[in-house]
Image 1 (cartoon, helix red, strand yellow):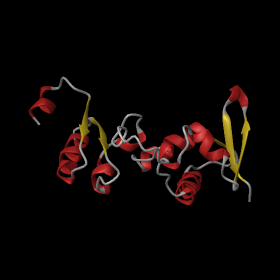
Image 2 (spheres, helix red, strand yellow):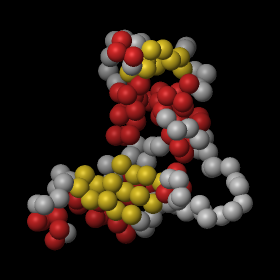
Image 3 (cartoon, rainbow, N blue to C red):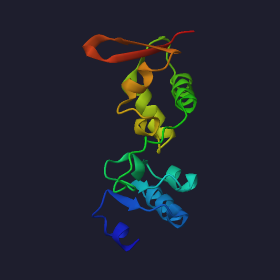
Length: 152
């Protein structure tokens, strides 16, 4: 907290999977500072949501269990969960158009879910994740932007 009051920092990175850091993250955010969290999948949701952005260490190359010599598939999150987050973002964005800019959807999803990471679902990018979803259609728009809409 002393560091926060110096005014020399715009943000903090908290690396922990411990819920004890939840209040610290909230307090830093209340002061207008950015808080980025990093921790394991077991990190309590309250701490993850208290951060502006939260990254699971398991999604990073060389993260926990990287020294394990046995090849095991990456844990993949439920694609239905990812689909629901995308559809919820579409509903929350107030627009008359049926096509949504992929970048805008991604920003909305991350702001509502700081721990959202496409690597959790086995994809490197949001465009790869969206392309695999049968309920969504993708096209290139003006300025080569990816656009997404519901198929139904």
